[in-house]
Length: 113
Length: 114
Image (tube, rainbow over all chains, first blue to last red):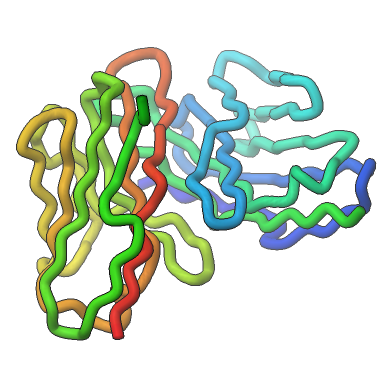
């Protein structure tokens, strides 16, 4: 089955700096890679996703890159703000009926004012 | 117009008791999941149902029994609760079989076993 590794497990940055979280996956058939943000005490929520036919996707201050050959994808947050502090999860799945997403172990991002 | 809802939000109970958590989604999705999030924040899938049928059962003790009376509901019943069952349980739903696999999570149920 799919195995997703996420690094680092914790990340602390100064406000305004960039943050990068990296994930690797094992199943070359995986073709959908979402990122979820979970604020303290809240539910995980999708912030950005990318499909295997695209190498990069941006949405304001966040971007995701995908390298299918190396089987890794990364989340980039620029101009970080204190409200970006949260746990971020990457996931990988195949786009099949009742597809199962395999989640990384999460990265706790702290943005210091 | 909550998309995915769970009840109860908090559940405190004694070891050995039996308890249930309910989940409902009004998104018209075909697939629903139960996840367990432990104190280290790891999100681990437990079960998945597609159109009321069990699709995924991730080596969860048989004290845990999911039930899906219809596509919009997925409940989780836990027998003989143990201390290690303390966690936050998230329900999620997904529109399976389409070009998107976004999962929508419920607010979570924090289970504390004393």
